[in-house]
Amino acid sequence: MSMTFNKKNKSVIAVFAIIAVVYAFCFIIIPFPKTAASWLSFVFTLISFVAGLAIVAVAFSKGTTPISKFYGFPIFRIGYLYMAAQLVVGVLICLIAAFVSVPYWIVLVSSVVLLALAAIGVIATDNTRDIIEQIELETERVTKPAKLFNLDIQATVDLCTDEAVKKELRALAEAFKYSDPVSSEATEDLENTLFEEIAVLRETVSANDTENALVQIAKITNHLNERNRLCKAYKK
Image (cartoon, rainbow, N blue to C red):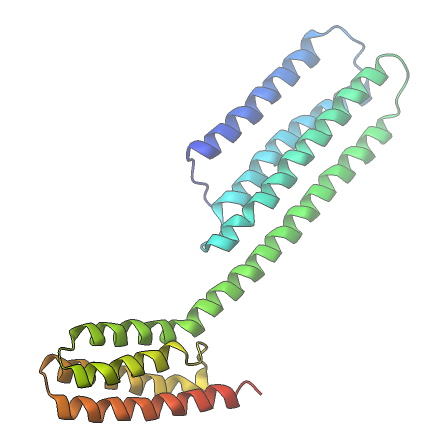
């Protein structure tokens, strides 16, 4: 896992570092009784800053699609909420321990629980992001042929100069536009055939071969209808 240190990431690191330095400076300089509970809370608070930076790395270094990148923000939110919660607990422990005895195990249990909750939150949210990314990539894969069909046919319409052929091409473009957008293994061979036929159609249109263009349009229309029937059948 690699982290891209853009301006946003550098700003987050700088803020975390400033807060950590100020906290450590105040803890060491302020002359209050430092008990085992105080030192333990101090250590866990510093750990929260390091963990927060690690969570930032997880939040913004993964994700290849817009939605999966968007899901990095809830992960980042877990990181800074954990850091803030641990900081508050750490300060409170130091204040209380300065006046009354605080058993170290209370600090240990509360700090470990906070760390565990943060880890569980990051894992759960990151897994959700991975699932969403897989769904998004799969959706893109199965709808790609339909998108390419539309682009190829529209480009062919733009090439056509014969009005009669252009009229048929526009009707074919409408048929592709409203055809089933989702492909499957059952339609793969037929879609490869359609790509080949559309390439031939473009050549005939470019050559102003009206007769063969109309024949090719009819052939493509039949195969497109067959593809739609297959799509409908395999959705049942």
